[in-house]
Image (cartoon, rainbow, N blue to C red; front, side):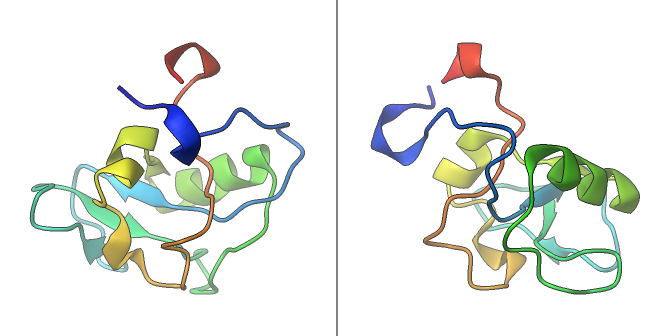
Length: 102
């Protein structure tokens, strides 16, 4: 289960990076790590800009604009999202995991 020092419950008004996930291929997304088949990932806006510091609601909107979703904490912890580019692999990013699951 998610948790430990790699996850944190934070204010929705904090700013972090974005990792969007899709269970169907999106042409501008990267295929996820090989241990996560049928998953595509991105850390970019629809304008192809890296997204490093946005609020939770902005992160959700960015993923929605792609027809995608925020990745889960587990997808990030499992390194599924590493191919998403933008230098966010060692940074905290927003996830879709609810506080009751952390």
